Image 1: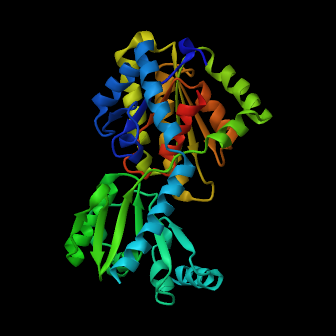
Image 2: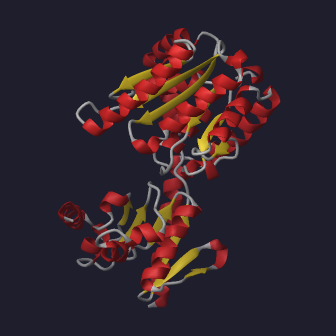
Image 3: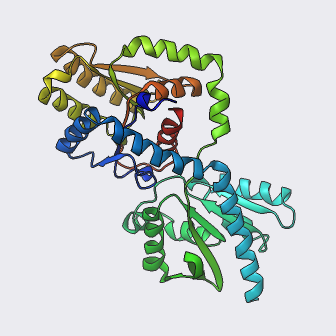
Length: 89
Length: 274
């Protein structure tokens, strides 16, 4: 993918869970109409360099945390708890 | 309760020793209590895809004690973000007086009836190979061409929402309207593609959709038809969704309260589609 072609900008409500998982999105309070307008302006007039830097930050994070790693980590924890249980007993 | 019991019985019948069981989401919260009364050695984990409300709201549930006790029978409890986990921990503290401890390597644990329960904060990611397999498909390229015609080199905002009060569509459209008012030079260069998933059979959904349609009519009569496009769909297929994400300039989500199951995965897809 060419860097000039990257189009990237996410506006998201701060109440949504994903907002704390990614760094790129612009977080706003949906009840505040002024902030909605402001964020739209910000996204529309965003510079290309800023878009690329945000995109790259988020991409590394998304590639790091896949579905596979999610399930794997969960089950690793499940196994670990049982070992703790045995130790206590 | 009945359904949860049936699920629990089914799992108990098929279960073998050393099996790890993972339960997903709030609908099946009572499975641990039905399952673990029969087999106390089972290793069960539960994961919440939805946003968990604060402890005051949890208190107002009928049968909240049974539900929380059932959850506390699990060995691992998973949440998307720390915010939801904290809500759960506060509820435990207020209702049962169980305090959490932070153990080595940053584990958060609860000690309930002599057992240690791990609270795990971890978010579900996306399957990259699955997305790659869909991008090759013919439906994807067809959908891309279809949406390219709609967008025509404009700055494109995209949003996919359910037809519910909590999807924040009022504020979104009102904010968009003000934005157009404030910046007249933008009006010819921007388009908002709003896709609403609406169930025809549900009167509440339909009513809400009609309200939204009125607001969009206001906008289109004031400016032009090109500024906003509203789609009402019953089902939005995966290749279509990806095509839309790959073309869009910006994603525009304003839900009041939403777990991560839909939105986060949408936006993560958005990141990778580029």
